[in-house]
Length: 289
Image 1 (cartoon, rainbow, N blue to C red):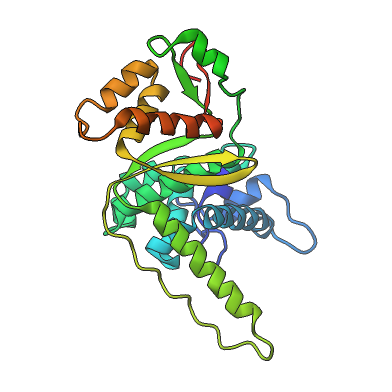
Image 2: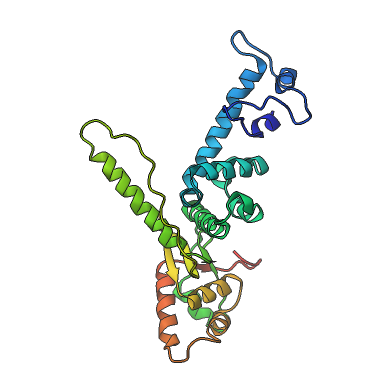
């Protein structure tokens, strides 16, 4: 039955007529589903298949508006269907449904060309938002923790709900542009006092040009945020995440930095902000937290 549910629907949102081994789907359904007074076995099975596919496609539609805007509705639907056929839902929660989508886009470039790199970055960014939304939070690092260890021995971890990432495109700016566009469209609709105007497709947003972008996606006070990072700040955070001590992380990140900049003051201000946001937690004795 799971095999039947996970096979993509046909163009009429029904079950495919032929099974994977060449038999008719109707004959396969009759092997394990009984008819009732109103429906044949394949019609009964089709109800469940439609429920599954409509739900999982809707989930990807809601979780990846940026990828959808990049590809357009029709190509996004084709991408989503191919992805779900390869990686059907395997968890009790739909929260995990799109975890493999960035890698799938990378591995199947024909589905997103010529915007594959942008789509991969956007999918990574939007999956990071899913992680930030309901990822766990551990007790934050305290000042005593910092003072007790000192910079040469201090190893910290990032909160599990935080993702620091480097992208080839300014996906954070593109996400904000989409939010503003959607808010404007909702406002336009709410101001309609008489008959609804003829429906028209929303204008496709202008796609961003390549530009190296470092960003942190995190949660604070049950709200999602993303913060642009300077390349050196990104390098420090990734080094700390990967297990380097505080002093080693700073030394590696600033090895080739402009000596004319007062890095000591800048790094101090970064750490004050990160600590105030509660980004750091203790590193597990068994390795990365």
